[in-house]
Image (cartoon, rainbow, N blue to C red):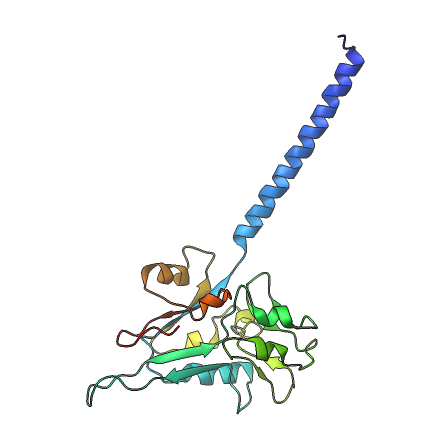
Length: 228
């Protein structure tokens, strides 16, 4: 079998093109993987052992995000008392948006108003697209959404995405907490405070069996049973 010089050069050129294309594809995949690693996934930890139920977080949230009276983006729920007087203790539980990685409120929204911010993982609502159908409120297993009484659109905690976070600050509830019971940060960064806390402390999340993959963690109160 003979191979002319022209065919050899042509074949070598084709191989070079394929190799170059493969190299470009590999570089593109590498760059995509690097960008994926840099993606932020915000999470929060509520330390029930440190929380004193002062509700300063609720008021700071209301003031910072201009939440009207009668509705709330977060609630601190107080348990029944543990122990006997004068050694009585309470468990305080934070109820707010879980910022689920697999958010059912996003899946059912007919207009795309409910969405997950790809750059931060924050679940949010675009009021310009919301028609107030309340599908997201009905499907949320955590019951943390409401219709804003003035805007008439769905609303909830968004980690102060368009207020404090937009200014490079921590969420209002985190900044105001007098006992540092709240920790906020990037869960994709293994060196962040929130990542280290989750690794070092026993934590739990609620309703994980539903597959929502919530990003709100709790350090359980010592005298109480972890909520499921």
